[in-house]
Length: 148
Length: 454
Image 1 (cartoon, each protein chain N blue to C red):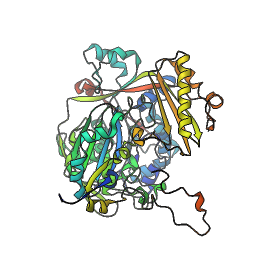
Image 2 (cartoon, rainbow over the protein chains, first blue to last red):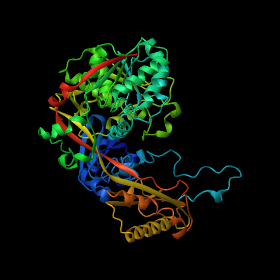
Image 3 (tube, rainbow over the protein chains, first blue to last red):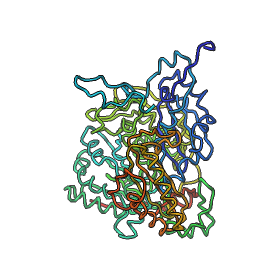
Image 4 (tube, chains in turn blue, yellow):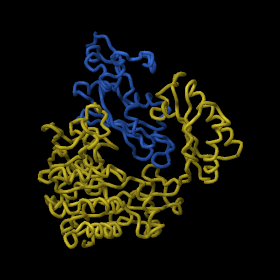
């Protein structure tokens, strides 16, 4: 494994997640799709790394708790919700989409892991243009890299 | 085996879900959670205007529909719909029962004693600081702003209601989880110090308490493959006396119960998973063992619990100023640049008016309102964005003036702007949440259970 080239994948391709709130703290539970990828998540998705990932979006500390029984880790992001609850002015005052914000994180994994997980977390056709139907106006379709 | 069906995950949830739970197959209990952290203060406000209000009115309407089936099949209903006025809620449910033709055939248990509002000054004077659990600040300096104060109650008064023959149990601020595990404690006669069993019930309650969030709703793992969410089946706990249970749903309904949907819900609003504190037991969520037991069936076992703490949690709501949110939509080209220019103009105008705000937040919906700075810079060819400006202040007048400064931007700011037809932003009073702890010996003697006959 130490000789194998590393490739970048998104945490989105290794795990699913759900987030919520407790006051001004957002929680994000990150769940490995496959048990075999859990050690990789434990190793790379540390509290320090998560704090760096969110930068100015998380004012306080980040705590991590392991749930080895569920192949999951739970993060508490303190001071992430502009005061939280009804005080917060944020659209996402209850931290509902911090889950996918965390899954944007990039991880370095062995190429064979990358090949196995590539594209997971997205609708199977996402990112590809739909096949052109007879008479379809291709000029109305966005270029493939429009939102890259 | 006892089946506890989840019928409502919050006040405003799918109104048809509990009806589907009753009609879709066998169940023994229907639990309905109506209370979120700030719901109590909204209900308190309603009760201050009308002494007969202050509870989830939806619940009486629901009972009118399902009462005959519940009476005929012996389905018991446990809910915290009582809000700050459980007695009036029970009265409304009794009236609904009469309209539904079950007069004389059902008893409603009413749990009270969670409301500390009338005792607040006495408690503070007696040396209970009710300090904020998150910040440590004492309550006294904001005492005059407090609008509601309710203790989270556990299973005991619900168990007592059931033991004394209630078909429907209406509580105020019971914990969400107790609505599921109190029926199990009643049915199986679990001892108060059987902490592993009660902790299993708490996990069952946590899985049930957000409705379809455990059965395919809001599920990130392959959400596109979850069938028929249009008539999603809410979760059902099939519990055994030994504390093991299966999470499932009615087979004829949509949604899915898988390891993934259940794991996501277990992690929802999780703190330290080894220390999930409830009034009855502290549950250890790191001991949960899950297994796939067939289509839409997930087995749960292995859960350990510890004795509860000497404290109960108090949910306090207090008035904390005012806020308003204004939005406008800007179109291509350079939509994001136009929106940001408009926000800058707005800020200058507010400054010149001498208005001060505790906070002004500018977001571009369609670009950074979900993922913040992780979204990076918007592409110049983004087709459109919605500018969303939100302000907060103790000064109601400042927030009101802000609400009049949005529309003028349409003709006095950057071009290609639309989406202002909704009128002026609404000024809202902020009811903030203040979690505190109180010695349980102060509260528990005041709990009471009484009954209303339909």
